[in-house]
Length: 189
Ligand code: NI
Image (tube, rainbow, N blue to C red; front, side, top):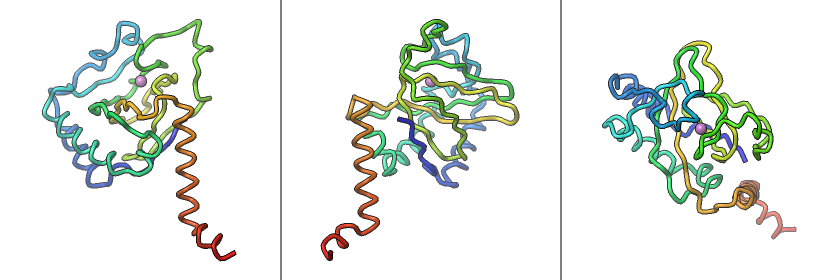
């Protein structure tokens, strides 16, 4: 299940994050520091040093936004949110297809991976996409400008992805019924 969540960060939070990240010169390190030796060959980006002050400050902004976002909570049912990380891709940088957790390139077994079909996502600043870490994903080469982003892993209260999807759909249905005043209409009829 892939869910896009719009406007997780508001304009003020975006300005604050961008100022901190753009000014964090020496905290930017080669993204391969957290890639296994198998993932490193397809990873071309920069990351903020996880232990730096700027990382901690930016994490606080993102986590507090996540904790108050109803759609994020409904879609993910978070148990543990791992400290968000920050990366950036300059022109020509990319992160080839990979699976999180055990980052492996599967030239022969790729077809056997259970992926969510093929989705292409490009979101406005401040929005978020959530997807199972076991799905194959990639960042295509940047053609112009700089792509600065935040990424993190969440351990859900519901381990099984299918069950999590059912609960999400049920919650969506309940909210839709609430919005259309369905209870009141049913009582009257
Ligand atoms: Ni990944």
